[in-house]
Image (cartoon, rainbow, N blue to C red):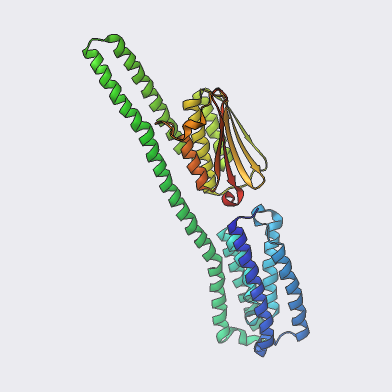
Length: 391
């Protein structure tokens, strides 16, 4: 399923291709004779007819750019060469197809890496320049090519090619940066909330317990003092485990690796550190997701595993990533003690993890489903619409 960006990009390219073709047809009727001087009317109409059919095929069979296969690049290269040869054949800089020739460069700029779009822009400018220089040197009939407004037009066309190649990428880059900034702000809010509900609550509890120990020692009640010290020690250990796990979560970032290997590595370390059996299963092929979606799914899995360690008293966990129809689904299932769902509306301090997971899922346009009951284990299912999280 196409993302909203892909749909809008394909629509823009289709409209541009048809408009530039329509302008070429219009110029054949109202253009100056110089634009058509090198080819006959019959040849021009044959070219227009073939190009019209070709344009329809390109619009209704768009480039499957996400596959990034050899055929994808060959189709893009073929479209580019056809456009450039069309311009050269129909009087170069005086061609009525100059605007049409920018379509492959726009396609590369919208869907591929910037270096590919810039390479096509450079090749287009170079081919037109070399063609005009060669023709101007071969025959005196073509000396006009490098004179007057034609040289200016060549410079303008070159600049326009590079602008077309660079602007979409820069716009997309700025949008991605803005999304990343918003994600960073949201992550800071989550960390602040976790510190307040976790470490701050633990420190408050420890402060109360140490006062009780002090009072018990003052009253020479050794048994009560030792009991309180045991509670203090357990709370300190739990707080240490929570902080260590938070550091591990923040350290597990998605950079060069994608979601699946990063999550797989984290699960292995989690299982080893906590003495739990954790099974990780991924359906193949799994779609490539946007960086924000991958990071949020990683954080959701980490939060769900942390909840199991803290509260479930489980021995086995299963983490599943799957694509079902038009959605991506993550399930974290354990064989622990479960809980009453009615208690989820007003959780006690330290039991905020599921609400964080729900916020993350809803932030991606998805939803959270929890299946549990006392003594039945727990299954946390996060479902995300593929059109909102796919790259």
